[in-house]
Length: 83
Image 1 (cartoon, rainbow, N blue to C red):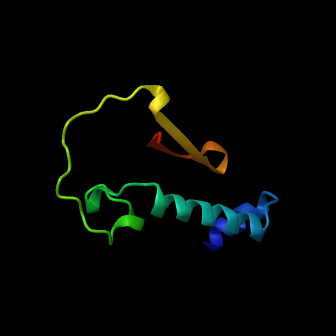
Image 2: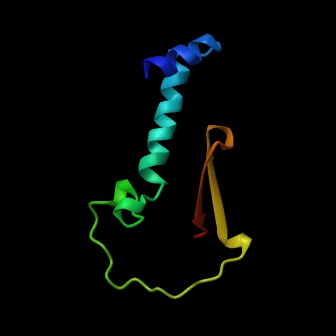
């Protein structure tokens, strides 16, 4: 962390900007990124009971059915189905 902070400070960014970047990444990591080691479950939903009645049927979606959420100017992206 200290090295990253030094790197950002050298580029004209302050501590508050560094904190913002870390908060955004941590939220993305826990809320939007599925983890293969735990069955492609989000860390934020890990404690929820698993649904045993999962339908393995393939569903085709059009581009209109997909939503993209970006963070940090598009560096981090997550995709979800439209409601």
